[in-house]
Length: 288
Image (cartoon, rainbow, N blue to C red; front, side, top):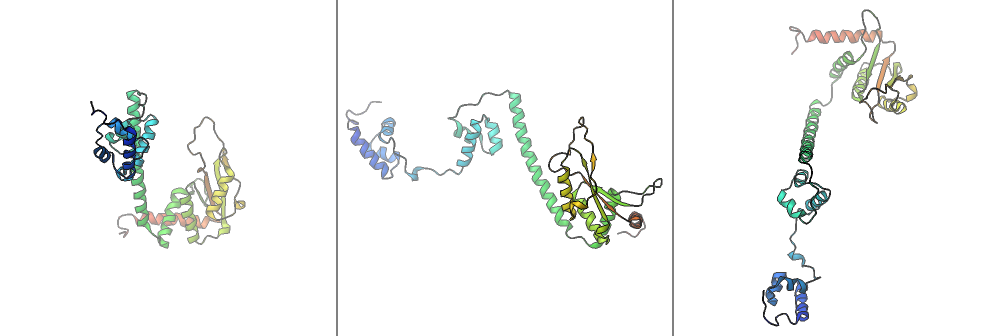
C-alpha cells in the first residue's frame, strides 16, 4: 500500500507520541486514530515493548482450562481426548492450542480405544458416585438397633457364618470365623448382649504364610480390644506358587477365629433360637 510522502519520516518523534499515548492508557485503535497510522506494521513498531493497558485485556474464566488443554496437547492428546477430559468444545480447544505442534498421528484403532477408555472411566466415576450415595442413604435408614434387633441379627449371623454341630460329629461349641471386620464387630456386640464373659473368649488368626502375619494379628487384636498376646497360635495356609491369589496387599488380614469356652449350652440355645426364627416365618405363625 502506498503512503503519503514523508508521513512516517519522523519515526522517532511519532514513536515518542505513540508510547506516551500507550502509557496514558489508550488502546491500539485509539492510538491509530489519534496519530492517523493506518499501517499495522508501523503501529507494531511504534508500540514495540509497550504492554497493553489492563482495561483492554478481557478476563477469561477459562484460563485454567486453556492451560490444561495446552499441557495435554503437548503430551500428544487429540482434540477428542482433550474434549472428553475437560468437557469443553473442540472449537475452544482448537483456538487454545493452534500454535502448538500437532501430535504424531495415531492408528485409528488405537485412537478409538483411547477415546472409549476415557468414556468408560467417566462412566465408572459416575457409577461410583451413585453407588456411594445409595449406600449413604441406606445407612441412614438403619439408625440405632434395639437389643431385640441385635439379638435376632446375631442369631442369623452365627447360623450363616458360625460352626454347626453335625449328627455324625457332635461338637457343640461356639466358633465364629470371618474376614469382614464389620461381621466381627457385630458378633462381638452380640456376645456382649448375651453376657458372655470376655475371659471365655479365645482368638487366633488364619492367614496365608506369605502375608504380613504380625500385622494381621495386631489388626485383629485392636479391633476386638485385646492384647495380641492373648491370641493363640496363628494358623498358616501354605502358599502355592502356581496359584494367583487375589487376596493380597496391605488390606489383606486373613480371618479371625473367635471361640467361646464352655459353650455347649450356648450353642444349643443358638440352634433353638434359629429354629424359632424359621418357624416364625411359616404361614399361620402370627408374623406381620
